[in-house]
Length: 73
Image (cartoon, rainbow, N blue to C red):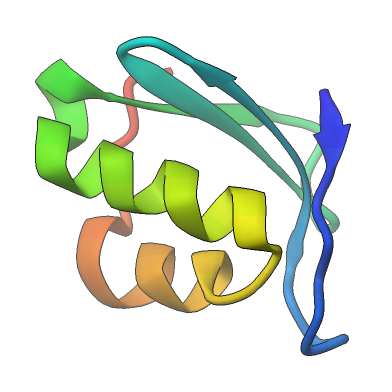
């Protein structure tokens, strides 16, 4: 997994891994890895999450606001 940039300094996201049809997200406060896939969260949401992860800003807020519990595992 790649460490999240956390430009704001307050994100709960610790790390992420991008694949063609999903993104795995690891949070600081959990040992679990959450998979947001095309089938669970929707293609457009996953693609937005990939962009936010790559820029290191806004991923935690997007998850909380838009896809919250739409993870696969």
